[in-house]
Image (cartoon, rainbow, N blue to C red):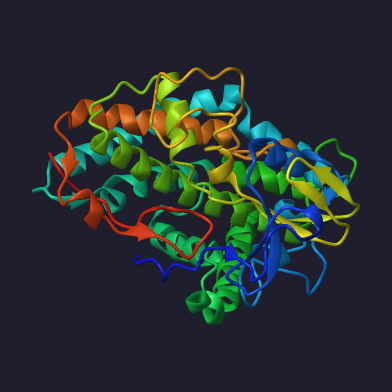
Length: 389
């Protein structure tokens, strides 16, 4: 799917941190937000309860015509205690132990996709042949969603995470279509339950985790499934493609997908460039200046992962880089830390290991500067990645 024209944040006219605050930027919607990019500031904004995800109605948004911040039933847009209740119900499905139990199936799916690739005449688009199908098949099996609907998931997720003006007219209709699909899917599973994650969530909806009647509401359940489908494949697919691009162009292919390499890939090629905006409910002092109550702040994840004060030579890809105990913000930080981070790490490790073993001579099929990159959205990465072997 072709990307939209570049529509990323840009400095607002006269921006310079008026009043000593972080710089103002104009986001694709045309609204102005304060941008924080220092590693310490991003972590503070993501964890300090004075920065709320419950944005004001009619307040600044990333995308014109509304975006994911408008769904009041979404876990992404809740503060405690609502957020705490729903997070508690869902988090048990994504523990390290449960994620480790899925690994054999993730490996089998990756091997099957690699087999299909090997049976083709190169070149092929790695995104279409491998990077997208892997997380989509995993999340479909995990949730119990029909496998044949995966192309629709890609389209729905792509529009949902877009911020460009080209997608404004279709974003609302796309959201209704996606939500209608999930509502019908939930009802079908309620009538004929199985043992997938969706059935666990439905049980939480119908009974409450502790039998106290405080499970997921119907709209909360639907929003949760939409979030899992969207986040469960879009970021992971581009993370895999970006990692392959970097490893090949840096002359490090094939590479053993050890912990150091994986961490550096996640730092160097952060797929989600920004976190969801936060609303300051009080004046807050940051290293970059004061954020005033009522201002909207945009945490810049990719820039924070390349903060020279934390990561020397931040633009250099260095798998042997000492961690010094500094956590990445690739999956966020604080209460909204990504529920699926363990699964995403596992998929990345399996993907790179499988590709390196099966295609040790993998290379780009076109010059690196001819690779088109996805823009106009929250997630970045190659829009297409032609490779040969």
